[in-house]
Image (cartoon, rainbow, N blue to C red; front, side, top):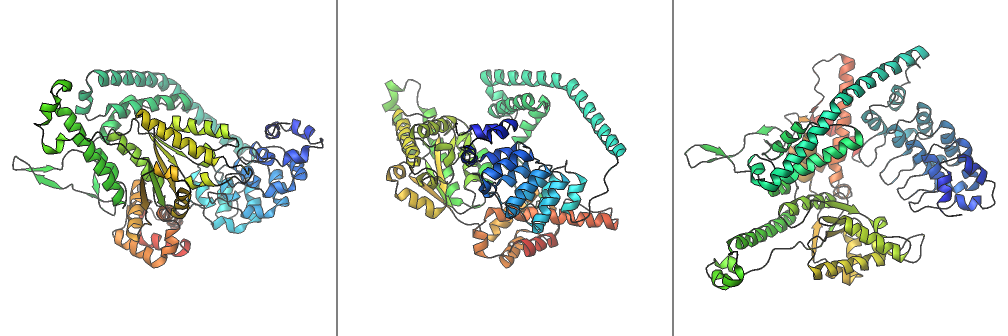
Length: 599
């Protein structure tokens, strides 16, 4: 029987129960597919009946404790895909410790159940199996209660249990019917409004996209003069039409145009507490005051990076070289073959030498977790596109499993497909050092075949002067990446540039936290500023603890502060306070999170 057939049978249930009588069933129940899933994982993901789950557990008892490639046990899959109470009882009965196991994102089965509309009975089983899970956070700093509240469709009974209070009394059949009828009427009204407005908006979007394309082809300067970038408009309209096709959610063409104009204008300047301040003014040639010059898209993008001045300097150097090359190109005569030599002598010394347009070098990013390697690479795709060094602002993130297969030929094919998909943009290979690590299930390492295919394609693109070949960035932890490249000299030669991402300082973490909170619409009490948050981080955490998390510290702090604000809001509601501001963060919120969660 082919390896994947058992996994497919788990979606049909009845056929699998018939198959369970065969002598080969125990062996098939222990097989993994290409994502590391057992048939038991597949059964839990497709809401199989308790009979199917019991048959798989009987055939392979160890399956209940075996994680897939994402670190999910079958109990995680069951919690995520709304499995029945009987299924959950079987899994907990076979492996009770499963309720305490985290996946690679730090989520317990209770986190999965709370964020995926699991039944109150399933949530109660998981709480009884591991009560401490109620107060534990995942890697995003979210507790099960936070996830349930973020999912607006979570039932009142589930929220009550996660808050540690008894669930409300069960509704009568009449009350349930009334609630369902009210919801059905609301959905009906929404469907009518979508039907009436959808067709007109779809036509408007397509007409607007057609008009933008005509303008961009004939008079592109007219769009720039109106404060719009034709490339951004093309992407915005195309995305809106695609979204409307996939989700039946229409957007107004006029709103998209207005949004594009707003994005091209300078954003208001804010201080460290997120308060709006007046922009710096300079003396104009007319003797009056004028605001700073036009918005610089590249500098706007670079200013969003906290720290990492060496990265910014490298980008600015490339920009100056590109601008000099463009200036030289614009000053040269059209018929340069006849008069080039004489004309060059008239150019300034800095422009006389033709150094060619700069090319982005493939790079290596090394740094501890959370130092911003992925975020900076994503931003560089936009920056290099703005500078004309990349064809597209595209960013593609991959890892070992996206490049490597079990056989050499399939590995080469997968690597080529990834390079083609990233063509014109940035290809970011996370944890690149794993390409040099053999698979646990396959003694023959095909990771080296992916490496050699990358090298071959880099050399071929350089020889053919292919400007659509993606900029490749290898990323990972410093020790692992350096050791990996030391054993891969051919690969090392193709990546001349290495950027080290140091751990964030307390001041930088404080600045990131304030920026994140401001972006979420929060405001700060007057006692909070960057220095105050930095001092609290210095006082309540160690450098080792911060170095293991870096930027995630700021995300954890924001998640914890949001929980503190919600807690204060619930208390204010019980006390009858009407003037509570749910968007205001006070100093005690930050202090409480650091003293209770940052240990």
